[in-house]
Image 1 (cartoon, rainbow, N blue to C red):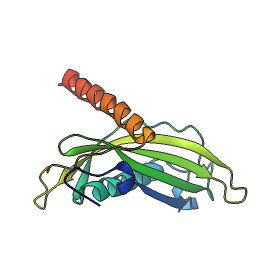
Image 2 (cartoon, one colour):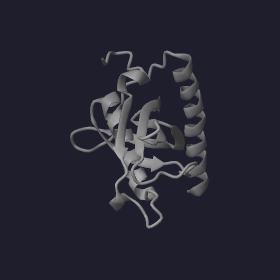
Image 3 (cartoon, rainbow, N blue to C red):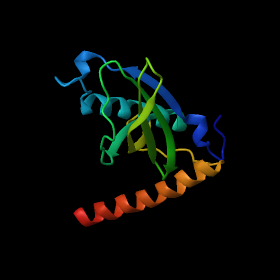
Image 4 (tube, rainbow, N blue to C red):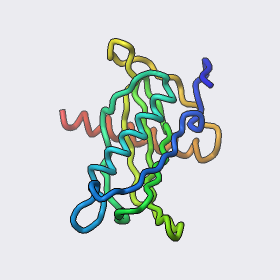
Length: 160
């Protein structure tokens, strides 16, 4: 539900799962990082689109490191939520968990932060609705994201 005051992170959050198939894995039986990255990008875009109600484009992805291997047959659970909104850009956090379908045991595999930009019908950046964090967790993620956004901007200035 969008209103003049914006949306809460929970209003646009997305949870989905995939099954790792042999064609998505290397000879050792672990998922290709690129396959997981594709799913991360997709779920982040869905959350951003749900937040702003427009098309979005990925502008950047923070570093990605795997904490646990994801194997053929594992279920991969992806949870995405908008953490912060600037004018047209949004930071979306994605949590990736591997789950053994036989035992139900799950383990954090990786997390990622992506920057996506809201687009109008002509593919130009457009103002995204404000983010209105309500819970303590949403407020914590908002403040952490605000710091990361400032750090990204500083890094970009230094690289220019």
